Length: 413
Ligand SMILES: Cc1cc2nc3c(=O)[nH]c(=O)nc-3n(C[C@H](O)[C@H](O)[C@H](O)COP(=O)(O)OP(=O)(O)OC[C@H]3O[C@@H](n4cnc5c(N)ncnc54)[C@H](O)[C@@H]3O)c2cc1C
Image (cartoon, rainbow, N blue to C red; front, side, top):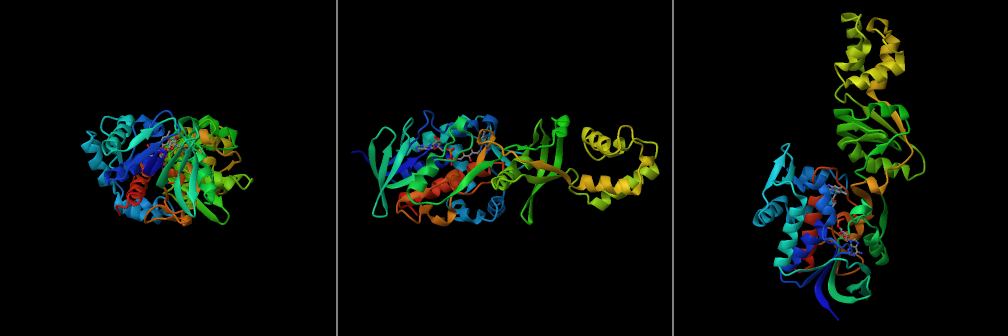
């Protein structure tokens, strides 16, 4: 029977990073993936360009993952961004920073990032096998003893790293398989919902704006008594919203929808202006340019098509500023401050770039990524209940948590 020190389930960024770390510290390592392509999803990231990290300070980086972000503090210390930048350089990949924030490979090829990690892991001695899914994690007396593959082979190991990713983007290998393995070991899982996905609204008039971009908008959702909102660029689509503000809010919206009731979301197209500022602007326009169409006044501070649509819906076509009453100005300012929409249909996993949900963090030791329930089992990457926004957060977390898990599994901490 085959035997390794460490078996890594999954060859995404978390699995490759884990395998590389463990093999570099002398462990015999086998990386298994159920897909026939190693790191398939990684090759499709960032529109094929792979936004693998960003320039944020670690404290700010963690904060972007929400209140559980501090879970990754040890992972970021053990495996900071600089470590991976050096590694890529050693593998001949020059990183570049776009918008002063986002790291991409200079040549714009995500597959080269995958190749770099794969090459480094193999050079360190790790063996990889594609089309080799793990069906069962074997445990005896509270400690892991190996895995059983989908073809029925049993392979022994004293450490098994579950880096199986999540359910997002099934066409790229997203699957619940890792979550099922975790559950079979007794782990709790927060049920996955689609994250980093478009938001579909019930209001059909919005489709008239498809293709319009607002460079800085705020999209929010009421969750019980809390309001969660995201700010950033927003794209109107035929069915609702996309762009960073919508993608980053979608996990919260879809989670709210999992209660079975529609969610109320709101859009602020001028997030730096208060309702009173908007009222003052409208009144000033009425006084200064009374013969101008109101929609032209609005088009000076927001996208023209949105300005026209809002004015027409409230006041009809060709409405001049001089006809605006104070009550009308209040109504318009109130609407612009918070345009409401209803969402009753969650985005599907096919549309999602990540899942919100995963293995409960309280059951995993953040210093080693080891299970608190089964000795020798470690978790890394998206399988964990920690999801970041768009912009290189999720791959960096996968790499860092993978490395920490690999170091711990190899006894190198
Ligand atoms: C289209 C798209 C674009 C994205 N762009 C970016 C981006 O630019 N920047 C960014 O930070 N994030 C991006 N992401 C998110 C990012 O891809 C994930 O966060 C990241 O891949 C997670 O890494 P992982 O190693 O945890 O999981 P994955 O990359 O999903 O890898 C998990 C692997 O485990 C394998 N597996 C599953 N179950 C088993 C099993 N039972 N046995 C063996 N193998 C198994 C799978 O086949 C898969 O290869 C994007 C996602 C998508 C879908």
